[in-house]
Every structure is written in structure tokens, then in C-alpha cells.
Length: 493
Image (cartoon, rainbow, N blue to C red):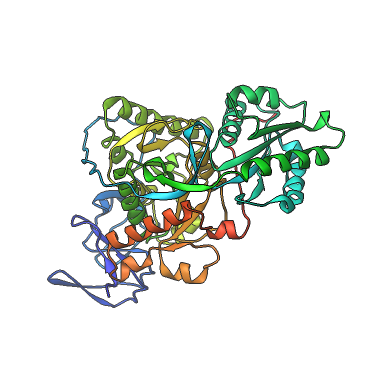
């Protein structure tokens, strides 16, 4: 079994696949290398002498520069490696487009909605317009569990702290995200729960929702109700009766939309879970389906790879704006653009944002970028889309669901129990995590370091995702978790 991996022929570092003690002698091609010190699993060590100020190469690209001379066999991490990234820069479109093969579309057992949309769940969602009625929404969800029957998968509330005391863009974001969720096809029925005096009340939200089926979407304004719990439960009984009439049927994978997200990454993420997810994404798109990549700050340092995969120059310019707008968001708040990676990332072997980003973007596979979406915008174009959202796990995953993702694939090297409004598949980068947290992790990509092929793992992931689309619950669903979070950028009144 391999004990280390040199990812790209031009790399000046390799990654330890298991803890490697100091003085271990490794065979590097025709030469040998003696480790100068202990190298933790997932961490990097130098293959060649690296001078101070010289780029450190991983994935075939610079991940920063050495802050001191680094000798072969030495540990390369935050103590001797620093980001080389700058703030807003100019970009040039140099298209590098890979052809997308067409393969026969498989099917999943989903729900066909009115308006021809497809869903992978048949849930009842309770969506508050404002945080003031969060406890009412939660109480309604708890009391309504007794009504669940037929093909209804779950009854869930989505509390959040917004909908009032917001200004400008924040208020628009809240309204758009809530409307997106009301219209999401994974919900067979929706109760929109308002207070009555909020900025983003029911009447305002209706203009964002657009035309709706009165059997599927019900509204309740708590200040207008004598007893909001009694009236809410009556509406939920109606919604359960309506949604229970839907049944699963075969639906083409060309209609499946999958969000791509990672969190708590480690040194294995960019060489196991993310590449496997990228290969899955390529297969889904080859069948006519759609993938959405987000968390813009974790594109910094690898953004040119995505820009050069844009299908045309208009998409390239939109991607430049996507990147630079997020950099300006940081600087407008007097924050460092490259305040990343997190402590957990560093513990797992990631040293700089370039190191993290070059691993993160591998979730997108190699197909051309066909769409670039502002925060809250629904996906329109099949194929690979880029979505504006921060790196925060809950906010970004909610944004993916709001843009239309039926399922979110969440790769991780550290593990997390959270969920988002749609099934959230946790994919581990290493088998130790999968073994330790089987109540969190749904799929393990660790076998890639033990000789299992990338293609085989990606095929197994595709099979698993189709089972999830057909109704198999993921671990967070089994635990009863349903979370959401809205992106806040401005002041609160």
C-alpha cells in the first residue's frame, strides 16, 4: 500500500497517506528520500530543496511560497509556507474546454410536481417569514408529526432570525431565499407562517413566490389568528392530505440537480473525496443533469481554472465578477481576503487558501461552466453552474437548496452532523472518519488511498445518490435534522 502521494509530476511536495515517522526512508522514483521529522497523515513534505520565497507546488500549481529555506524530507505547513494571493486582480480568458460525452440517462424514483418539476422528497415544510414566529413553527412541526401518513416523508420547520429589521440587500436575500424554498419541488406542501407586522410579511413574500398552487401552499398570519396553533394544525392536515396523493415514479437523471459543497476539509479531501465527487459530477452532467458549485471564498487561488472552463466569454466575465465581488465584500468590511483555512483545516494538513481551493474545486470535475448564479437565483442552465455564496457550511448549503439542488453532496475530512433543507450526503475523505462517525457519514472515499479506482468509487457514489434520490434516507435525515441559514451582509435595525 502507498504511504505517500505525489499528486502531479511537477509537484515539489508530496502528501503522507499515513503518519510517517522521522528518519523513514522513502523511494521517490529512482531516488530515496529520508524524512527529517514526523509527518502527520494528510500533511505535506518537501521532495526537493525549496528556497525562501520560492513557490511550493501541489496539484501542479503554486499553493504559496516558502517563508524560509525548506530541505527535502521536511514538513511543509503553516510554519514555513505563506499564501501568495493578492486582493482584486485582472484576469484573461484562456478557454480550456473539455468535451462532454453523452451517456444514456439513468432514472431515479422521484415525485412529479405540477408545472413539470421533479422532487426527490415529499415533505411538508413550515417556513416562517420572520424569526418572531420561530417557536410557533417548531411547535407546529412537533405537534403535526401525528398527521404524517401515506407518501409524506417528513414534516419540518425551518426557523431563521430574519425577515424584519433588515435593510437593502439583506432583506432582498431573505425574501428570495424564502420564496425559493416555498417553490422547491422537494416540498409536497408548504405552510408559510407570518407574524403580521414584519417587513417581509406574507403579502410581500407572495410577490416573490409568484403563481402557486393553493392546495400546495397555505398561509397563516399569527396576529390575525385567534389561536395560531389550532389554525396552523388544521392547515397542516390539509397539506398532508394533498401531498399524500403524490407517488414516486421513474424520472430521468437529466432532471436531477445536485449541489457540491465541502467543509472541515483535510489533507486527503483534495485527493479522495473531492475528485470522486468531481467524477460523479461529470457523469451526472453527461446524462443531461446539473451540478452547482458554490463557496466562492474557497475558489480563491483556483479561480482561473474555473474561468478558463467557462463555455464563453460572457460566462467568463460573470465569473470574474463573482470572484471580485466577494473579494470586495471582504475588504469593504476591513477583513483579510485570505483569512483561511480554518483551524480544523490546518490540523488536517491544509496550509494556505490556495492549498484548500485547489482541492475544493475538484468537486466540479472537468466539464465546462454553463451558468453563473447570483445568491438566491434559481438554476436555469443544465450542466455545471457556479453560485455566489460564502464558505459557511449552513449558509452555502442552504443557498444550493434555494437555487434548486435536490440533494447536496458534502465532502469532509473532519465530519459534521448538520443538514440543510434537502438531503445532505456526507462524504468522508478518509476511512478513519467514516469508521469513527458512522452516524454522520454516508459514503467513504478513503478506499481511494488503498488502491480502489477513482472510476469505481465514482460509480458507487452515483448509485448511492440515485438511491437517495429514490427515497433512501441519509444519516442526518435519520436523525431528524433539517437546518437552514440565510446570508447576512449588512446592518440590523
